[in-house]
Length: 67
Image (cartoon, rainbow, N blue to C red; front, side, top):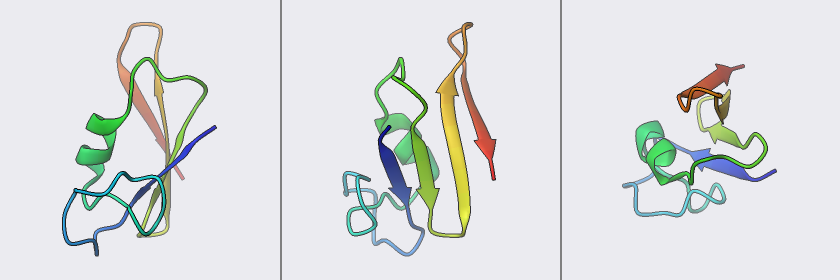
């Protein structure tokens, strides 16, 4: 299961989001960069101590579960 990283302290969204060093600046940029349909349930790690499990439902919609 891959992990994806979002950090509002990044300069921009040019990173791949595959580590804290290459994190996306905005959550929306990270969601748009994900390949759908998702295999498994990737975890997006946010630089504000939040975690989002993002998945695609049977209806094709994207869902997230924040913790």
